Figure 1 (cartoon, helix red, strand yellow):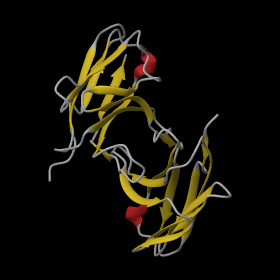
Figure 2: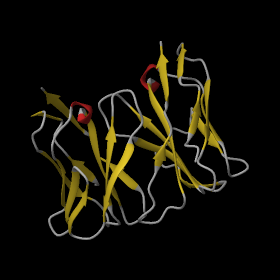
Figure 3: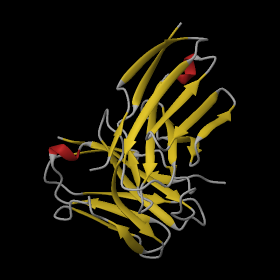
Figure 4: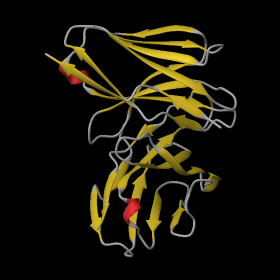
Length: 115
Length: 109
């Protein structure tokens, strides 16, 4: 079974530029998560989708971040414009559902450096 | 507020046993997860506890006490490849995962 796919793996941009990340979850997984992980910290949930609907985006900085999952499968996360403090690893995860026993499986992440 | 506490860093010797503690205060409880994260890699699932007691899986065991808001991950027969960060995460009443900052485990020969 293929795992969660993400691209690109690395990205370096200058502040005020825009950037987009792509994620393809494990086949059949209805729930998709985008996390931001700053070095030395645990993952911070940015947005959670259930199929193509948003379940939780309370910690998404909506003035600069946006995400979509139009067909309920793959997803894109965009930052526009980027700030220095956006330098982090952006992790995508998926799970079958969102119940108590549902385990989240993570992709390899995209390492973003904003200069 | 919701809070997960775990030590920032621990050091242990190859072949020994180490216990990584996690205490939590969350709005509701729907299970506790332990993940392993090697440097520069994504977290990978280790264990899940929802009832009190010990869950054993090979060299790794995880314990939960819901009344005390406490869990630990026990690693036996430590190997150099166990050097990684160990993340504790709790599902709250909304089934959202609340993550700790992780414990960096350093294994010395």
